[in-house]
Length: 288
Figure 1: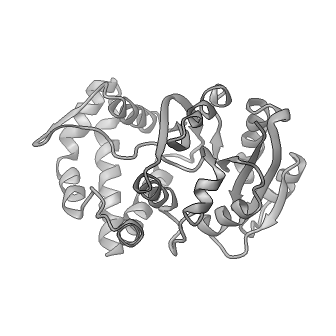
Figure 2: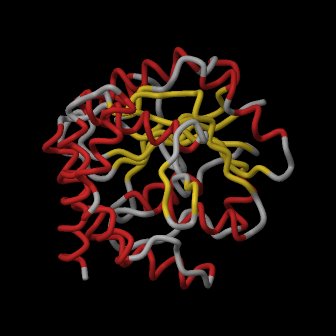
Figure 3: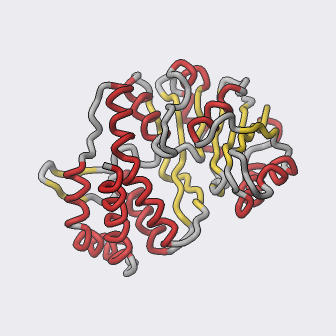
């Protein structure tokens, strides 16, 4: 099986050499057709680094992930393609495991999971979510046992069946630079296909620290209302998450943080989890 590799970048020089080197070491050369990188007007050495690793670089015709992803898709020639993001260190067992999930005619997309490399408490928190997704741990709500909805459905270590993504109109077009993966997941599931997330294949999300992560959470909160509106427009369904449920999670986050800290044996989660919820709510209130 030959595959095209795609990536979209913006000022990614800090991690890009490590990211591209790992891709070359994980995905055998003989299975790679094209390496397509769409750059969003970077002001650093991103383009130069990409070309050093034999990626063909194209300019983003607009800006943002949505435009970059669709420009990359437009150039894909193979029945399957794989997308990466510029700060993802691919799991060493990714190629031997994730593409196998697409052997089923019902599966359109497959991914592994990724955990932040720092801080430790945030990494442990994401590991907890992976355990929860696999049903290894659970939280009791009124409805009983719950699992994270769509956990791990991201664009940064993901293989797709090209024709299905094209038939769905490509990657969702969003005005704010977030939520492309969430909206795409809803469209795939609504069309009757599956998006498989293999929690045993674990890549590393190269991060800048807790302060940066909190700003990222605030941005996600800011964009969530638009994402919900787009999902409603695209598939006619109201997302499971609501503003009330987000506020409820924040109110109970100190107790939940303590529970997760005890479960994962990581004391810093006691304050990291409430902070994550706080910044998400701050973004939500700003976004309207």
